[in-house]
Amino acid sequence: MIQYNRDNMAELLRAHDINPTHQRIEIAYALFSRQEHLSADQVMTIVNDRHAETSKATVYNTLNLFLEKGLIREVIVDPSKVFYDPNTGPHHHLYEVDSGRLTDIMMDDIRIEGLPDLPAGMETVGIDLIVRVKHTT
Amino acid sequence: MIQYNRDNMAELLRAHDINPTHQRIEIAYALFSRQEHLSADQVMTIVNDRHAETSKATVYNTLNLFLEKGLIREVIVDPSKVFYDPNTGPHHHLYEVDSGRLTDIMMDDIRIEGLPDLPAGMETVGIDLIVRVKHTT
DNA sequence: CTAGGATTTGGACTATGTCTAACTCTCAGA
DNA sequence: TCTGAGAGTTAGACATAGTCCAAATCCTAG
Image (cartoon, rainbow over all chains, first blue to last red; front, side, top):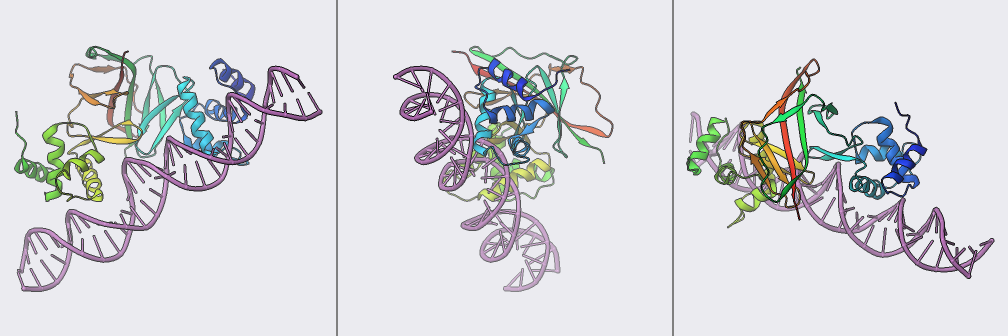
């Protein structure tokens, strides 16, 4: 089990061709240390917990940079906000529609069969499987 | 093949326990006659094509009412807007990330196996499978 | 024709996310 | 040590999807 710290993060960023600045390290640390799905808003709250030091623009810039560089993945399940997922391996998602909680489903056992061939001239970017659940009251 | 017209729509609405008003009929007709995935914005443009006669508030009210009553389904693939799908049967979606086009995958042959059991006290609301593709070039 | 509930409306409002121009930081070179 | 250029950050204005609300309008039963 890897312990995440700021030094780790700097290496991780460099490995992805990202110049590791203070803000970027903090944002990466927020995501990777908790291995959770966070919205931009949540990232900003966490990073600015003690002293406000990172602006909204930087949070969005950074998350989009991380996306481009393949460091994180975005998960689109809620029309009102995007979640960012530090786990870029193949896996799927369980979304609790009433609480808004989003968790991983490990993919090892899931098989999707019978997908039709793609139209010519297209290639797959990704396959997202989202299981939406709610609490039975 | 069913021909969709305004009278059909009124019946359809009544069958779903919705009072068929002019605006609701027009909005339902826009969705069902073309069997396409439309955003709220597109619905509004279509309905107000000749003379502006339906307000933004009504479009949103109505789409949300249709959703509640199970007449249509929402498809969340793009962080910037929700699509509404008149096809409520079980099927999945193909999303062209570069063009923004969203189409159905009509295969009944798709099988998803190996899904883990749900945590106790939860029930499935729906399973969304989205295949994201882009044009090769 | 009328009253009252259902529906629609314009416009104000909220929230997520983008853009821009100014500012700051870093670091290589003199 | 100083300098300046490029990269990064910032506040705040802006864009846009969607919600909310009080007032106006539209049925429909009587």
